[in-house]
Length: 398
Image 1 (spheres, rainbow, N blue to C red):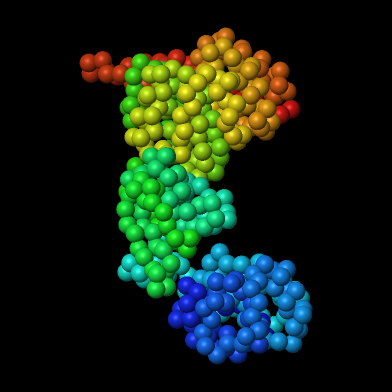
Image 2: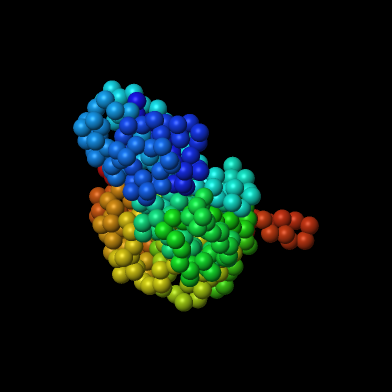
């Protein structure tokens, strides 16, 4: 019999009764050195410090008729190595049972006297993790930490994005005599050092309610910088087919109205607003803060040069190029030949340049004209006042 046992905090006291019995009856015990150093009384001396699946399988092959306990910290079902080993053992015909343990989630919740059923559970231990996206998508996020991401580095990333005022709680060495709990704001904990065995809970204030694209024009902070109007913004996001995890560019971002809409539509993605005008850049930052669009990054500079260091986009909105239409489209398609493009144009010359640039890059241009009229009171009457027609140009591979 092979028993995969969750050892909780790694102390014998956190073992379940069932796990303790299986451990004491095993003729071979495998696991990380830290766990083997804290075995309860009554266990075999036949122990080996191994944790990689191939090492474990080699040990089992060397002692084929021995009941074996394989130890894991925390719970076997929560980001545990048991998930990778279990199917290998079953394919090889071993008789296997899984005995769960106390997870670090449970240990932290118990330590601070809180329920954990509403927390979002995320691992930043040896995994790619975007803490900003996670915190934007849920008000309470629990992070397993380790490797390159400590509670301090995660809090630093949140602080850099504008979430430094989020409440942070760190649990160190949970379930052991060295257990410690630290509270503070994310920006405060970003400056501290923590034990290697630590977990992090982030709780942020409520964000402005999110809604379908097409925020009212007067919702944005505005200046003398041109702004893409509500109806055009909604249509542009539809043309771009934005998904929640997209990497998005807004080239010639102006006030940042489209950038904000993109950020709200892709809470688990990243938006880069590219703008060279200082007044416009200031407005983008203000609107970013107003709408808590913390996954929006301002890139101050002129395209296409400002695009060089950006990650490959899934979709790009082009609101202005300062006459560099062909070079901007070339930069986009160089990063991602399959990027979805939507170009806004008011002048016929810009329309012509957009169609020519898309065609030159092997794309079939589709042009949509949007004409919007809004009512204006004139005494007891209401007159329709027309806005300038706007062309949205998209390109598809032929």
